[in-house]
Amino acid sequence: MLSYMSLERIEGDYAVCEVEQIPTTDARTDDFCCISCFRVDIPISTFHNMGIPVEVGGIYTVYHNGESVDEIHSIDHAEKARRIRIIDALAYT
Image (cartoon, rainbow, N blue to C red):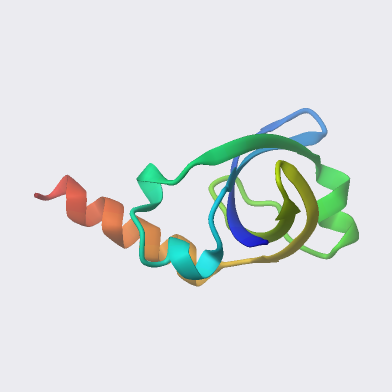
């Protein structure tokens, strides 16, 4: 399944990430704060080997099977911007 993953923090040689348990197409219409996720530690070298930047707070698309990430597909700046807009709007309501 292709889902969103957020990079929460870096600990040593690993990126601590949360992977959503919902396809990206559904995640764009649901409240991302309420989506079930699983936590995974991914070696930083995995990002570098795939030519994908490592950004704390970054939103990535990943292929996963259950709670195992098979491939980091890309970083999604547009999705990150969308989520920031939603959080900003909530802060002012």
